[in-house]
Amino acid sequence: MSNLYVNDVRIFRPWEVTKLIDNIPKDENRCKFEVLLYTGGRYTEIQSLYDNPKWFNGVSIQMPNTKHLVKKKQKTRNIRLNPKGQRAVNEYLYRCETGLPHYTNWYRDLKRWCRYAEIGDDNVGITSTRKTWVSWLVSKYDTKTIYIFTSMGHTINTSINHYLNLGFTEDDLSQMDTYVSGWI
Image 1 (cartoon, rainbow, N blue to C red):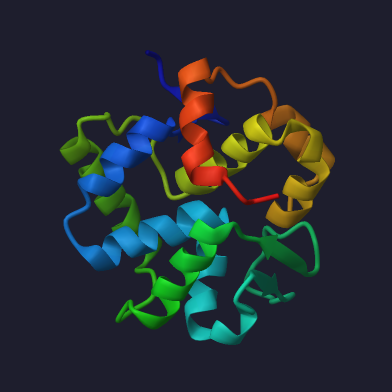
Image 2: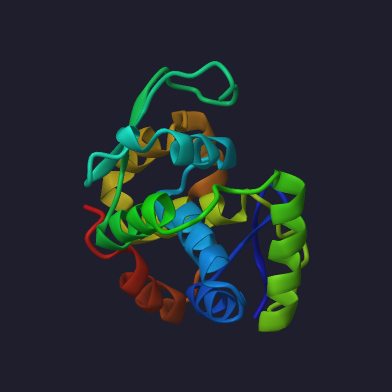
């Protein structure tokens, strides 16, 4: 089965995420991987969230307009979370001893964990979790794309050009249910 990419960044299939999570050696790093996946947040946003737990209201993340989050297309946004996302954010904020490391360390670790999981590490990057999450949501909730794209902070052009018509199999789509259930 071939790998999937958005803008040359690797998108994980559900079975790859399962293997990856199972092969991240430390609980704290699994927690950080899951918060990045289930929120679909930008790396810098989730780094900032750790220092600003009040942004999380127990149900969603109210991402404010902050100057260092340069790539944001919207001034503020509400990041919708399903129950797995709510659990992941809670664990990240209240069980992890530190927030996300410098992105170069995370990149190196993520590639190593992919090798441990035997899923290959080609084109895996710090945006792989974000792009994976958006791709899964669009694939499962194709009639709710406007909600997905506003939650993720994407423009319509970005959304159409990058996330529609990816090559997920029927098996992939079925396995996504476990992850995305309850988002809408």
